[in-house]
Image 1: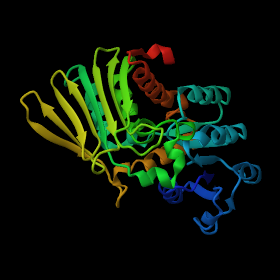
Image 2: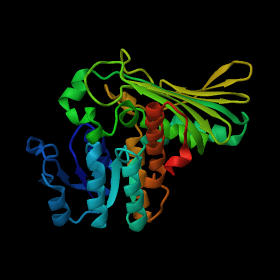
Image 3: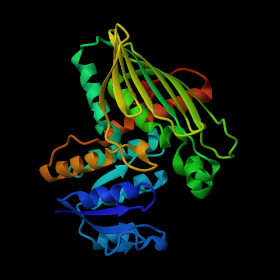
Image 4: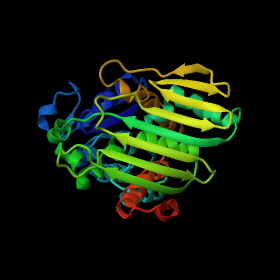
Amino acid sequence: MLKVAVIGLGDISKIHIPAIEENSKAKLVAVCDIDESLKNTVPGVPFYTDYHEMLEKEPLDCVHVCLPHHLHYPATKACVEKGVHVFQEKPLARNAEEGMNLVDLEEKYKDVKICICFQNRFNETFIKLKELVKSGEYGKILGIKGLVTWFRPKAYYDIKPWRGTMRQSGGGVMINQAIHTLDLMQIIGGEINTIRGSVDNLFDYGYEVEDTATANIQFKNGATGLFFATVTNATNSSVEFQVILEKGKLTIKDSILTKTNEDGKKVRVIEDEKLPGAKFYYGASHSKLINHFYSCIEKDTHDYIQVKEAQISMEMISAIRRSSEIKQIIPMEVYK
């Protein structure tokens, strides 16, 4: 039985904690948050306000890091140095430079596993899309489109001001909402040659972080990527992910994968499992990834989402931001 703890009892912990409790091979033995009013979040489970104290007192196998972005690296580092496996929420870090610290940490502590939470890789639609692309049935990839059009009110940043500062969050829509889409784009497109990006603020909220970003991505295999993300839409619309191939199109929208053949006929392929309630757009794959990671710990296998994989999306974000600043195309090799 894996002894599991959670550091950070904010919004995303409400997805992690049920997944832990539903796994028959894991037991939640401790939780930690600096807010003492959250003490009874999980009745009967020891509560700490200092994760260093928790790591000293509790014999743990795995810790879920569900903290604001600027605390990801120090908390993960503290766990790994104690020999405790880590399931860390995205993003990997605040930027590519800090991400490299985690890459080095993973390399130094090879016996300790760090899994980064890119749960959309486990969505049924994406697994099937990847399988169809790999089959070669539709020819080579010509283009990839990733669109994220959500809405965040000013109150979203006012309630948790860390979200609006570069020092604590590392960015806005790219790192917080659309990083999953960037991750999926690089998985399908492969190695990136260049990126030309632009970031902006369409809402005048007075915060540092961007609310809108666009990018043209040139992959080494010749495919072109179009990325667009904003939190200035009227509502949280479905993420759209499309792969354009020589002999058709594969599109994920409204959590449904469709394929369009050369004759223009659209066919429904598969639909994702969904979460109930308002946060349905999170998808239902957190549990799948968590369960998979626990299995990797138990069997000592390494086919989880490692730090070095998650670093690619950090490099993409840094390249988009740098390109916007200097208004030039950025070679991705700069961030290797």
